[in-house]
Image (cartoon, rainbow, N blue to C red):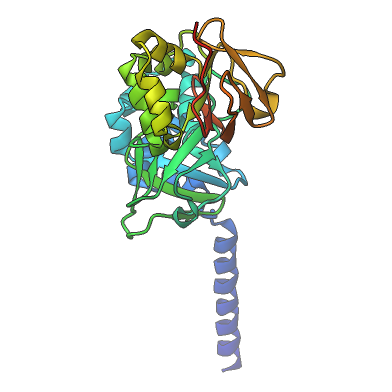
Length: 316
């Protein structure tokens, strides 16, 4: 009997040792952003794109990151099929990298932490600035929309918005978020609808949506700046002077951040007309200074500073 018990104990010890050995040799589960994406069928094209751009390893680091992850259908709708991603040339990789970085925000932000009518900074960069990363406009009215209609955060199969990773949080989105131009950001924010309407009427939207004469620094009046008095003055102008007034809000060829505004007169696209800025106060040709109320909305082809009044030039 003693021998039987001894053999039984030895067998149990052997099983325990083998079990521990198996545990020691098991591969730990990768719960980083990349690890979760690798196990999520609907994010296979995101993983392929991240790998192609050399970013998959970056999203396995400490972070934390907030990743707005386009689904496979979102990539396909944007022309990024598996074959198209595989066929990207070395010259096209930098653009893909910036596109993907435009979906990543530093810090872990769950959907409940996103603030309505606000700007957050992505890790992507456009052509306008080598240092200032792109802005993303957040609208939480009736859900979460990013950069206007560019992307909507969708729920996961479990019915929640947030997929928690060990180094951040993933939000599924239904569109690939392109690098926003000045026009894209103006359209995204309902505070600029009056300005967009005037720019459209004067045929200036293509200019501010493109790269000719870019980058642009735009001092953009919000809707409340267009008071009845201002609308009266604007309405009395010829079509050419309406265009000139709008051009007076745009500085061409520079991407001027709020901490680097030069002293002295600042030339505008309305040739021969300028204004000066002290702090956040703009001194134009009128008797009333205007104030910069939102700074440094970075776009791919320039930067926007929102102002509380319409800048009035000195017409000849």
